[in-house]
Length: 490
Ligand SMILES: Cc1ncc(COP(=O)(O)O)c(C=O)c1O
Image 1: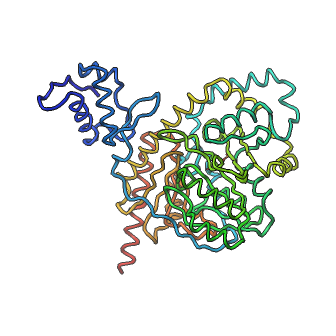
Image 2: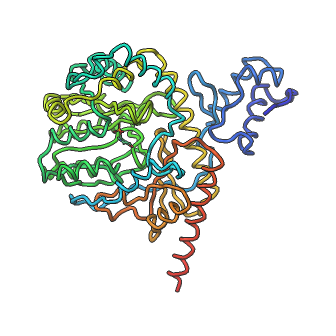
Image 3: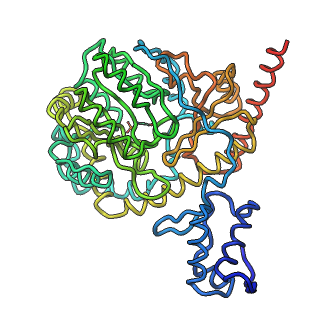
């Protein structure tokens, strides 16, 4: 995009004129939400104006809420300029503890290995977005340098240097923790499983958000626990008044939730809410298992704090992994168990002795060589752009009744259709056309809620094929809604 030099209108200062022209390009759609504005140097040359004029123009656009600045990256057209369909309201799941019924998850997860499908189902980063060349190179070196160590049993808690490095990284999430209380696990899911096991007995009740990440439901089922699902808002997560009511019953053994950019709603609590949540937990002497696998994937500003950052009594068990940012296959996750650390460490050593050493050393080497932050900056940009494009495609191809979430991080979108819509039917029809999605019932503890909803994974590089897949999903959705309308009208 090239702009011609600006002629100064007598009644307007130059930087305002530059800002207005850029604003026009945004409102006319030439510059789309998520697009990067030209660099200051480039625009200065194109318009024959000074650096400070361009800077002032960009600041003015920022004040007008048209653009956002991303540190060390530049100015971007803001997402809210996008006229999106409505946002789903807070959920209203049945509020009694239920036995869990989720038979579909296994099938959907098995499909994620099918290269013939457009993968909008499982919440997985496409491998081309990950630094595989560097990781493979580092792993080769790790194996050469540790020819014996890499094949031995390690200590159950994990490689000490990695535990220290990860404890240091938790400072970014506002948590000051001791490396000794870190346990390396095979991914975040294993960490969550150990935490649940450390805190509960079969038959106990655990509070979860609703909809809920299905692997959490699977872990609860395996451990013969009951899920108490609470209303959850797509912007800021679980309802605290409802949580307080649940805690007052004395039945809740633990709370389990995703604090930042949850799966599937994409919600993220603000600091005030995180602090209030910890106060409630303290008041009712209840532990919280916090899953923060998406915390590093924020689109604007700074990394959101973990709930653990507000944990005054060490009752938050923090779980995360590198599965969303570096490699899901290395299976490197971790847990800071707070006051429950000893029990989690015991569980780890009983159940699988230790996590494989070569992946731990590889992750350690990647974190230590300084490339991780650079990689994260790029990854956040890519995830954000892809999510914006998918939202736009949903706006363009789906029926007007569609509601869609507006996550400010992570890589999933939740779509809600009118009652009566059957996302299992959409799932089957889409599969037949080579597209995988995650139907809403997978995220329901009873297996009966959210049949009118589904989740899309946005961590796939944008391409014509992906756009066509969204178009196809939109057509299938429109057809089903039209049939429902005719049936109800009869
Ligand atoms: C919220 C959440 N937690 C945990 C995981 C899995 O993490 P890991 O692969 O490290 O076990 C996922 C993957 O989709 C997730 O969405």
